[in-house]
Image (tube, rainbow, N blue to C red):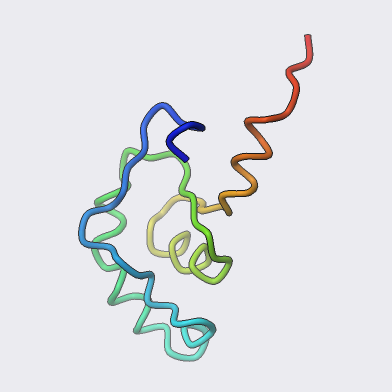
Length: 83
């Protein structure tokens, strides 16, 4: 991610999204509690990157920005530029 961006922000205090596999679908309080400080931590970011699809769901919902998989970022920055 650092090689694909000018600035990487790793939100302090966020060690897990709290989605717990698929448990976040049935117990959204886990995710909400784990990410309660995320929105403030990423307020100056335009995009988030994650390595798990369920994490992306929770992070997008509670961060206020769109989270995408790391593979999509790598794909985007490795495409040939058109003139």
